[in-house]
Length: 324
Image (cartoon, rainbow, N blue to C red; front, side, top):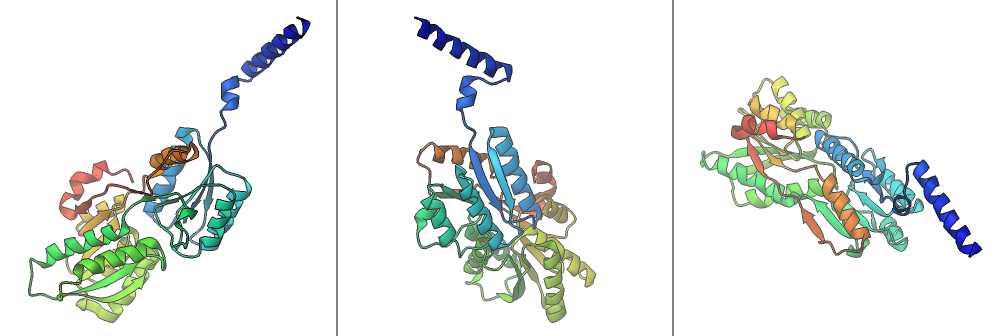
């Protein structure tokens, strides 16, 4: 009897103590989900919006987010992933700088029984089981959409040859490889569409301007179309076109990918002709996906975001709806 009284007293004291610090036994038992996330960097408007989406969603969902900015260097991401493994996070998510070179570190995560989710960009690994799923856009389809838009435009002047210059994304990255592949796949059947120059602009505005200046110096008024793998490079290139005394959007047709506000502003100003959407707002989906994986629920191998194509004609109407 005396023992029972002591047990009851101890339980009452514990409950009172927890209440005094604003916690309940249930809250103490519920361990917050811990996610380690390695971001590519902050090279563009798109990437900044992607980071904000992930951080905001984690905060709203009560998730402890360990965030690492790789500054566009793969070695920084490898270090971050190894740090997450050492910290025994519940799940690792990352947007890889490039596609290759991940097998070793992802095997380490698998050996530690920490699930891995790819966001925005894919990897090329020997063992697909090294990651659970991919969430993001279909970059090949984005390239195709850009190509289809150009085919429709070219059909209005069927006898004209259109010389295209291409600003590629970061060398070896999934969006750069896939957006190039999709675009080339679509325009391949039209002999009047020719890519005369193609070079990386590293997804940045400054590099896009620099490379476009070189294109203009080499090809001048022979350039009819610019295809940029993202809006930031396109916006940088637009500056170079204007400084060369030409009118972007008229003298040179400008096609880009992402759908950031800056692209819509350029379209409204008549300097960019079309942007293919690539949504960065992956945060809420990632948080729910992480919970499902940690809970042992089955998830799709690939989750593709739904996106559209926005020509300049709809830019003013659509601009107020843009969230990034």
